[in-house]
Amino acid sequence: MRTRVSRGFDTSAPYDGAMSPDRRADRAVRPLDPDADRAGAARVIYASADYLTLVNGEPPNERDVAEFFTDVAPGRGVGEMLKLGIESADGRLVGVADVAPGYPGPDTWYIGLLLLEPSARGSGAGRRAFEWISTAARGQGARRILISVLEENVAALDFWRHLGFVVLQRLEPRRFRMRDHARYELEHRL
Ligand SMILES: CC(C)(COP(=O)(O)OP(=O)(O)OC[C@H]1O[C@@H](n2cnc3c(N)ncnc32)[C@H](O)[C@@H]1OP(=O)(O)O)[C@@H](O)C(=O)NCCC(=O)NCCS
Image (tube, rainbow, N blue to C red; front, side, top):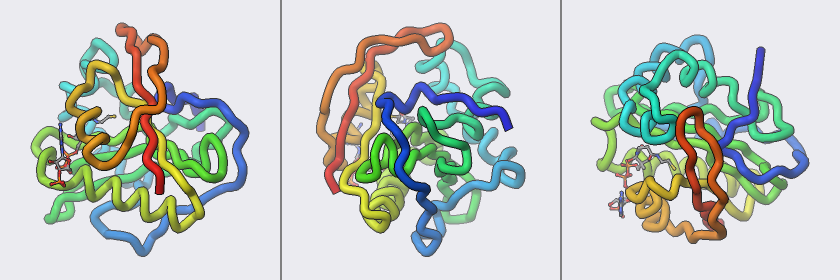
């Protein structure tokens, strides 16, 4: 399978051991199957045109769906990434997340993406996804979670700060297809 390094994962450092998801955690957050869940993930991505357009300067397309499943952190294989789905109470996929366990070092998990479709926002699903990720990270011995957030994405910055993240640094602008974005890297100590 073709893989590409995601621009969501910013720090570059060697990998130090594979991690596996905590499958006992909340059923509403679960690892995705790239075949069986592809259509569900595509629905979430197409429904989230507001976010994808903010990032890329163009509406979502098949490339975004393909890249969600093939994006990797630098030096990682796709099998070392956690591609997660977030389900609504009725079992429908309403969100996706992309996480690099043990990146950039063994004490850190890096969230490359957390995306809920608009109708699923504002009712606790984002917090639930973060709690699933932090529980799994802690279970694997991680001490912190990192994320980078677009400077323009003020609502997301406020959301992560509300969950206890603090800004570590401002990352210089880089290209996302048709847009340039500065980002903030945020840290949550576990
Ligand atoms: C950002 C996002 C993941 C947040 O998920 P969500 O389900 O909307 O957020 P929740 O309802 O779980 O909110 C959790 C808590 O954060 C708070 N919160 C949410 N957005 C907030 C904001 N903009 N400012 C301050 N607090 C906020 C909520 O009040 C809630 O507080 P509580 O649990 O203490 O009562 C979601 O809105 C989303 O997918 N947005 C579009 C994509 C995006 O920007 N992703 C982030 C990329 S870095």
